[in-house]
Length: 489
Image 1 (cartoon, helix red, strand yellow):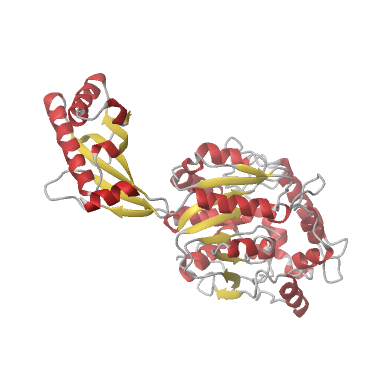
Image 2 (tube, helix red, strand yellow):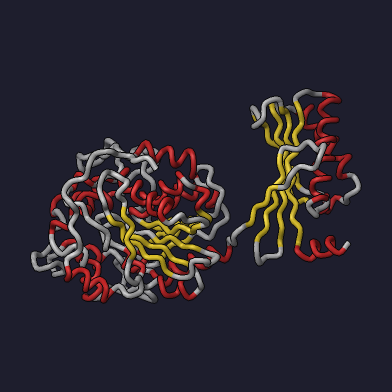
């Protein structure tokens, strides 16, 4: 992967002091000991990224659990055991500058593009992940969703939890007052430690993590305030101010519009995020669910943008984690775990098989989808018709439908199994619709009305292949019992 920024990093990043390592190991037992992936090929330095690869490597489901700032993978300590108990493989990693990953000492060594590149290098080049269900929260989403946009084929499902992809445009999404308040606080306080090794009552980071898990209401159910020991675990990677360059810098890296009330707008990353929306998430068809803390003021309202713009959000059981604040993995761990498990169960993996055209048959494509464990196979076949009108168009539609019929039969389906027909017509008018409808009537005339699929007609300016005037797309669903009967015949 080409480096996104060639500027050399500053002084060698501090490693973890013994106290921080010992405390983290003691209190983060669900994560286990991390492995470390070097990124020596990026930006001319050997920055080590700590990651945790838990569960069976051959599991059907692989979950990527991401964190934001100033937290680290310890944030998932309550969710790891129940997810592992379901047999899933879990991947977690600490962002550079956080947790047990290395921490460049200079604030200018942290940038949006560098962190995207570091994450991409780990997940794609080093771990070579496939069929991933990504759980994205806070900066884990700002960075991780850019990796999804670059490699959408690697991901099976997305869980969007208190995160967004800002584009420096208030008309697209207006960044909340809650975030700007955090940005001002971080700049004013510099997130200083208490000078006593971190974690005391005056430690800014410890106070942040201590209060941002649960909301203002009294804890109930799985909601609770974190203990003194948990405060220490969160702050263990930051024993003194020199380890906090990343935590100080991250609030300034969030892309914001020129109206940023702090007076420090951040244009970098906005254009790349906009491309991620238009080229990926605006057309993303795989399952996507939003699960936001109902008391989070930092990302409030962002879930609506996802639900309105992303096709993969349609029909999903979007929810709010009750009583949870920004770090909902802590304030609502049991609720979020249930959301993830139910989301996976409701959207099982799909096996896709491309059907080779039979000799002499002219159709534009055929795909067979099998959903393991459901006993259902879905076949989608497209028939193409050349440009023209009148008798030529009607004959072409009849020929295309004949090809579709043969292809469906070869794949084990019949006309009675068709559940949906989409017809796309270039420069659609009433005459063209009538001619194609006449051809369809001839094809389906032997079927009772109750067995005929619903048809949708769509006018388009052009089709994928030049010279085409009509494309007819049929989708058939075959229950497993019927497949077995056809196999016996």
